[in-house]
Image (cartoon, rainbow, N blue to C red; front, top):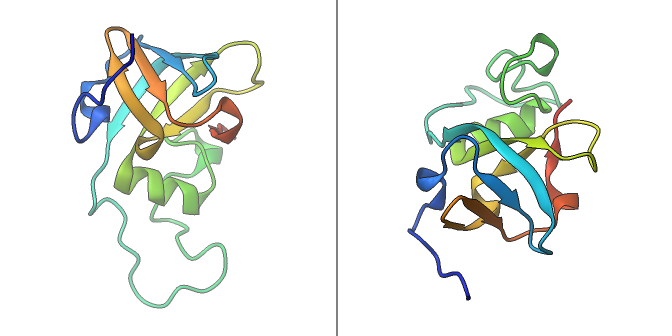
Amino acid sequence: MTASPTSPDPITQVTLGMRVIDSTGFEVGTVSRVQVGDPNAVVVQGPTVGAGSLEGRVPDPLTGDEPGVPPDVAARMLRNGYLKVDSNSLFLHDVYVEANQISTVVEDKVLLSVPASHLTPEV
């Protein structure tokens, strides 16, 4: 059975506990957080200088805020949406799936358009 896209924005159909399957058929883990994107979530004001230009405007991974990733990646995830996945033993840390990496939502599964190696690990 071939899966077809479920909606223009599949992240809106994801719920906690769903299994996450990568593009190779590997079960990555289960969804522990769903964050639908907000295009206005992160607005950089003024000129940006260096890697820390978004510092203070996005979650700080060292304090346990979500998503626990570098600031530039966090800004993108907050704007576009993401899933946090409690990973299986392949990963040392949980991983994040960006909304554009979701191919389809079928029954209790989130099917990804990328292999697990392309997911962002939690820091």
